[in-house]
Image (cartoon, rainbow, N blue to C red):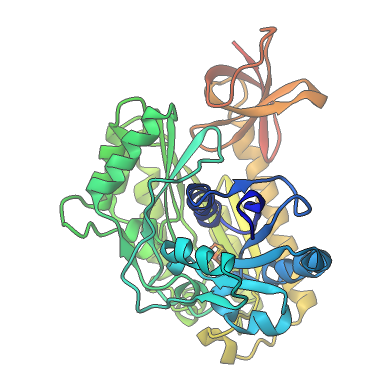
Length: 440
Ligand code: 5AD
Ligand code: SF4
């Protein structure tokens, strides 16, 4: 590639970890003299940052590659990054021979070197560091794409090995950054004008400061006290490592948002054991009780998998009972999807697809009713909302409450409020997934 052709396009699939990895990848490419463009057609280098958490997510990248492979003839190069890259490795070159670069997230620190090889004309470049690597990907070149939320990875990888999950294989072993470097990045983000920080990790609360200075709860408190920061979120917590001092930190520091995402996966202790989740239903509910006894009402959300191999109808009902008991404000429900390399792959996936779909539908319908009543409790309240964007078609501004609830509201001000600004909003109507209000 000639220097004037150094343009790239990147599309990101999957979770917030991936969204933030892309911010770091974009910053690294820009530092290497590349310019980001908005379409595949304009780009010299086309990158897909991929997700392999479920089969459907994995298939997306192959569809995309297929749709755009004709551009290879025009001299464009393709790179597959992220979890599918790590999982499939060199097999991607067999399936899509026009791909030149395959790299998992544990190898991104080598991107400058891989880009140089790409520019030199190499066609089969891989970055496939596995669970051996101790390195984290920290870069001062992060190109933040989100206008109102600054992401900070505090822990990469996963050592939990839940029976259904690819992440320990795609993202490597658990490795934390020092609290000093996290706080330095938090201050840098605040200096850029961000007021909201989201701390990221596959198991964010399994954080262990390599220098032993701060616990996870102490790190939360410290980030919450960075000057200029008004909201701190963290995701995703694992129940096994959820300690009471996290709730105490939320109690003590109002900048720590009143929302905890705590994936339960199943309400049945037998299924949890088969999933290797390392906790029981009672253990989980004890943590929920701690969260519910906080001074502020803390909003709860969760992830649930239905149709895990061997899940009986009664065990599914245990999950439904747990929904009724916890009263979550948001549930991400998934049908079990068998994944390569995982221990659950050898378990007999005997629940028919139609039954999995039925369980998911029953779960989501029940949850919708729970949310209808939870959200209705906000009627008449005045909430502080951070503006995220606009919906000009409906003449509304879109934002989010500290509890992470979507709030769509109107204002009489002729000037639209900027993303990242805060407004008090009175709630005048409620839906199962959003609140409607007027700026006061
Ligand atoms: N099948 C279905 N859902 C899965 N998840 C993780 N692995 C699988 C799988 N194999 C879900 C879990 C996790 C969320 C990010 O995705 O609920 O918390
Ligand atoms: Fe997908 Fe999980 Fe990888 Fe995120 S970490 S991209 S959700 S497989």
